[in-house]
Image 1: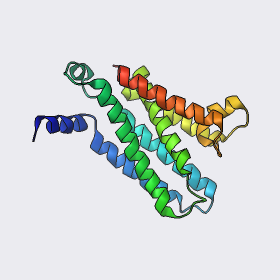
Image 2 (image 1 turned 90 degrees about the vertical axis):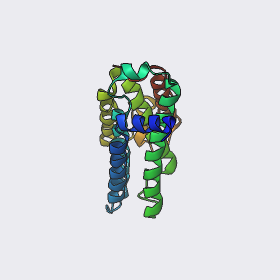
Image 3 (image 1 turned 30 degrees about the vertical axis):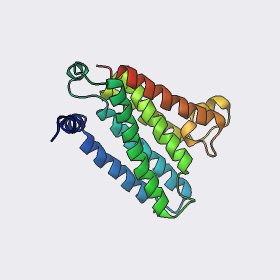
Image 4 (image 1 turned 60 degrees about the vertical axis):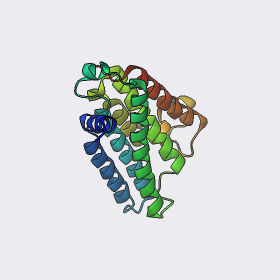
Length: 197
């Protein structure tokens, strides 16, 4: 095994990527189970909650067991962090989108654009939380905010659309802008700072 490949394998192990992959598969299975509901609204909510649970698993991967040791190694950490976050969010999005695509019940599915915004924004929020509070607590803000949005439902005013961005259907300019802001802000903060330790 080459030194570069060995480094990648060690990185994946230290960041609990195998266990996170299992959570992603569980989220996909949960999404598929949502299609058993006769009510499209229930299936839609299950699909969103599955995305939230999958993204929450990202939190544990955003820091290694010894951040100071990692920071001392001659690695382009900004690039590594960006790739790490992007690839994991992409894998989760791909799994969930595949489940929605093969279910063949369009009325029950989370629309592809909405699913992509949800996963990227929640991944960004998780990354931002890791930069601000540390990876151990990074799952709390996305889960708390997302479950509150699912419980409250969409709201009409501009401010409320920003607060309930995940459940606005059809997408509004405000909800889309909020989701994109979270995605970009979180990715940049995590790439620059890493997880707070």
